Structures are given as C-alpha cells and as structure tokens.
Image 1 (cartoon, rainbow, N blue to C red):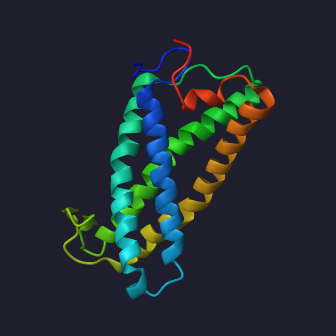
Image 2: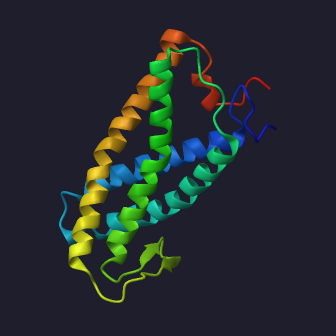
Length: 182
C-alpha cells in the first residue's frame, strides 16, 4: 500500500488528509452558516459542534501542512504556465487559509476568557484571563471575512478538478482518489 507521494501521484496519506480536511471544512462551514440566523440560545448546540469540528480540523490541517511541506506536490499537468501558476496559488491558499480560519475562530472564543470545548471530552484553555471584547470583534471579523475567499478558492479548485476530469482527461483528477503512477 503506497502511503507516500511519488513523482507521478499522491499516496494514501495525502489522499486521506485531503478528503478528511475537505469534509471537515465543509461541515464547519455549513454548520456556521446555520447558526448565523438563530438566537444565541438556539444556536448554542450548533456553535459547540462548530467549535469542536473546527478544533478537530485544526489537527488534520496542521498534519496536512506538515505532510505537504515534506512531500511537495507531484508534477502538475501540461497546462499553460498561467494555469499552473493559478493552480499552485489556489492549492497553497487552500492549505493556509484554513489555518487562518481555525486560529481566528479559536481565538475569538478564547478572547472572551473561555476555553474551546471539544465534543465535551476536553477543553483547550484560553490564554486570556479577562474577556477582551474589542479583540473578539476584530477576530470575529477576520474569521467571517476569511470565509468568502475560502469559498471562492474551493469553487476555483473544483472547477479546475472538473476541467482535468471532463475536458483534459489527463489523469490529474483521479490522483486524489487512488494512488497512481507507481
């Protein structure tokens, strides 16, 4: 079983981390969108799930960043330079922007001198001893503002994947489903 990446494709580690992070990011986004329109009391269970999944995503996002920095990326397709450059920017932004979202989200909670509860199993303590309402507003603004470019990047990424699957049929799309080119 191929866990490491090769020059021609991704191994199982990259594939699993990719889809696990994608699923967690989508779940956190969908849940976050749900509690925006609810009263604070009605939203509390969804917020707890949002925080817990966000903290879980943080672990896998960091693992993915470390793994990607060690493994690099397999060579890209034969697309023109501009498309390869765009793909590289989107891929790295999709690795880094979730870090901003997780950090700003966790610090938003912590800025109120509250720990981040993770599924009721444990809590990540806050470094703050007193609530800081101004900092909370700034962090919350950063967190909510970063969602828009994240959604845009996901759309561009999916469109690029579909281009490779439907138009180019060059095998690039299938690299994220099973190791190839051993």
